[in-house]
Length: 347
Image 1 (cartoon, rainbow, N blue to C red):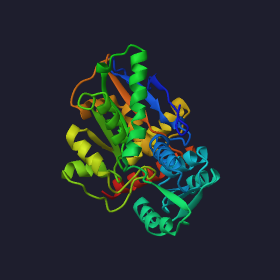
Image 2 (image 1 turned 180 degrees about the vertical axis):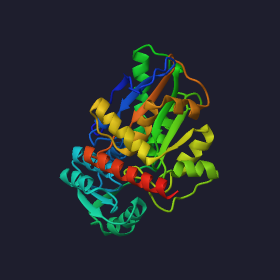
Image 3 (image 1 turned 90 degrees about the horizontal axis):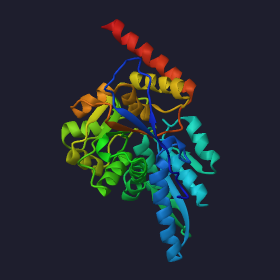
Image 4 (image 1 turned 30 degrees about the vertical axis):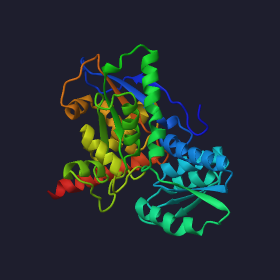
């Protein structure tokens, strides 16, 4: 058991779709909302911080100070991991981060600085202004929210747990036809690929990458066949959104020809509301993008380019997140519906 992240359950769930689909695949959900920070970020970010803390401790060096830039969830993961390891922590978030999330990070005992209109600007301020001003008696640990091998290594532990669970239940891994995960900057995606490579499964189990229109940087890169940057994030899924993905994510996407699916905000928010009603769990739109596939298994078949049957298994990574309330989701849905109606009436 790690000091900074939890082993989470992988449970078979039945999603009420209102349709009788006798050949529908079995759906297993990995519940990352049960991490200390409420999201999968605790794995990778916690692992990076702990690994660096052990390194400095072994060298008998300076006291440590954790510095993180984040749209929200990565900062909360850095804060909770730092609290567990009794390390001071400073997080820089952009103005797009919900005030509720800012307070959650502060309530862990972390200093929060709000700067920049999106994550990249917050990160630049952290690296160019905040960290250089650190007292020389402290050694800074810079925590990138998604682009670091230690982060990917930490996230890969969920694949260890998935493999262990199926083996303990005598379920053949050959039955697993895909893993569905949300993509922001690519940290979770890289972690899953890293974990699959460890078991020589990366070319056997495809990873379906889910994004919402307006923060679909991974899809844009795959379409352009080169790394590109979005001018800004326009989706409601701001907590995991990044204007660009890690180079390693783009390389993995090309190497393994990962299916990439882009959904509309209104459909994903509607899924989040359905999920809350069906399972009494509030989740963020970024996470809802993956859960949307559980309610619409025909989209999984379309992404994979093949039919699935009742013996097949699909793993859905419910990546969690702490930024949204039920009221937030309801308000987002009302606003998106109004915008859709206005657009329809003007055509």
